[in-house]
Length: 106
Image (cartoon, rainbow, N blue to C red; front, side, top):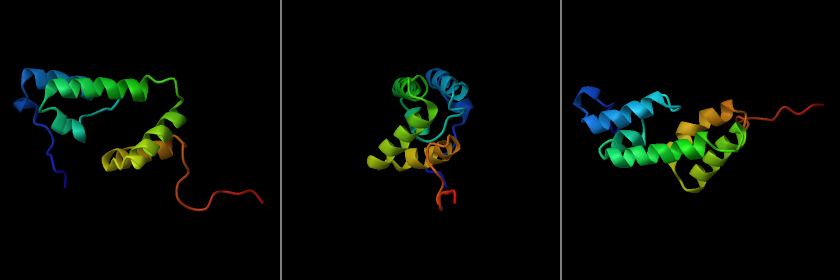
């Protein structure tokens, strides 16, 4: 069960709704995780959203290296939400191998 419930958009202030719409329409595809709490301070949510978009999506790193850098950093800093929210994307990008035996050729 999530600690923070999904946002009821009808209850957002105009400033919160503007930030919510930017995040929801962006590459993240939705508002979840820490952004639910950050919306309580819309200016902070907006600034963090822009920073995250810059370092994740507007980087010169390729997708594999970018996803790998994110999960290595998340793991090293014990950012559990970031780790669990990114691990599936990192596996899908083939930046890491799934658990199990690697496919060695005979």
